[in-house]
Image (cartoon, helix red, strand yellow):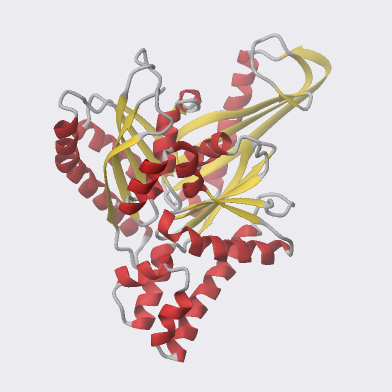
Length: 410
């Protein structure tokens, strides 16, 4: 289903929902094509209290409960704000992005070669794409751990068509002896999909619904923000997970994650220092954390450092899992909330250097997105109001519209 309609040049209003590893963030967005950035009218995040003893079914149910809660808040508070500021405007679009571990982004490549030249037709490419989809479904069935998750395809996009070693646009005139088609598939838990469809039917029945794994909007936003990048590693830090996406030759090739994020760390710090979870979480925003921790005992400080070291160990292991025989790319693009970006940038850079025994560069995507698209006064407003900046990727993807129309919603 395409975002682009006959009202392409008009202002659009949409609900953007990010389902994270341990929280759900919902926003109402105004997208004016005359502006470089979307306007955030209202946003709200609700945290899902997860425990290590929870089973998969219980954690999925917790996320769905949180989803319902935040959507009910949006239906009351959010709509009220929209009506107050824009009396006649209605929400026409509903965009969901789903992060690890609830979604997977699977890249599948199908190749064909022949001694004689052949014409690259749309029908032939479609046949290769059907083969790619079949391979994805077969692999899901063969993997027992993944099969237990009750996954289904939600969207896909043809990421690249390569004829004789060169990327091409399909127009039915190219001839080639070799052809490679790369397809990106978003897969998520079937229960979450059903819950989303029920939410739409009850609260937003006349909206266009689109579903993505978070890595898809992340990847395509990076293509716009850093247009010359053809090889990099995408890193998304959420409450309960850190997910990476490996980009080679300008195409997202492989994704993986580790179940440790900002709240995961804060939970352990909270226990060690006997402070609230919110206070422990806020410590990740402090650049000179060592000075703040001086009031605690040496044992407590050592235990906190051990938490950080354990996280770096998980990051090193994750960064060595690239899906191929190559090292993680030199450039890493970090997405997390703006106030915690410096903390995770430091640990990510150190972990990447250890993983490859070479130097890397980490870019703060959230900060760069604000700097490139938002005027200074708007940047200041976002920062001073402590607005939840984690939604900026999804909001920008909705606003840009360049790639959304290429996706097939399943």
